[in-house]
Amino acid sequence: MPATTQPTTAITHPDPGKGPPGHCRVTVTWQYRPDDVPMEPTEEEPFHLRYHSYCGGCGHTGPARSRENRAAEDGCDHAYPGWRDLPVMDHRPYQGKPLARWEEAARAAYPPGWFDRMGPVREYRTPGATRHVPGYAPGGGYCMAVLRAAPAQPPARAATVQTSLFD
Image 1 (tube, rainbow, N blue to C red):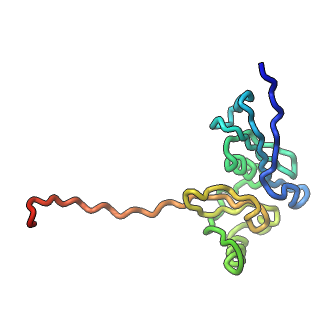
Image 2: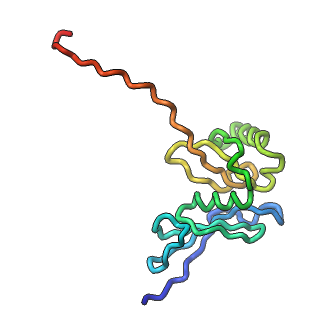
Image 3: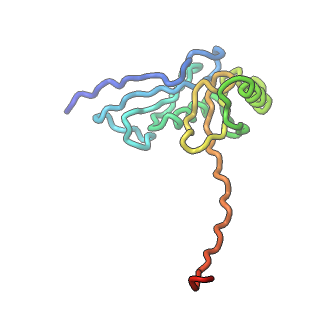
């Protein structure tokens, strides 16, 4: 039987130690899972990367996940109960005055002190851009992607049948 390799662990959140002391906050780590290491029951697909949420405030570790987004959601469920019920913002602008206005609107829409504890912000995204991005919320927490529903398509026109060449 081959020897099991020790998995390598890395952190995906840029500053896991930042944030108020004693408060829970979200960090996501990943490990390489070699072929000879079995999947855990909480992993959905046989990828070679395994993600976990980790709380830098209390040491809580979430279950192994196949997707980084699922691990980030586990961490937010632990550190920020009720985050899924908060308002969804439009997509975050990249810089300048639009970003400042967006952050001001987010602070007005979310509970007081939410972003001081590195709480996540929910924002609409389109397909293909649905990664939860660490460090993009106003206080440095996660921007959690919420897929925007596709606009309703107008009903298709009824097809007409041409009965002659000159109609």
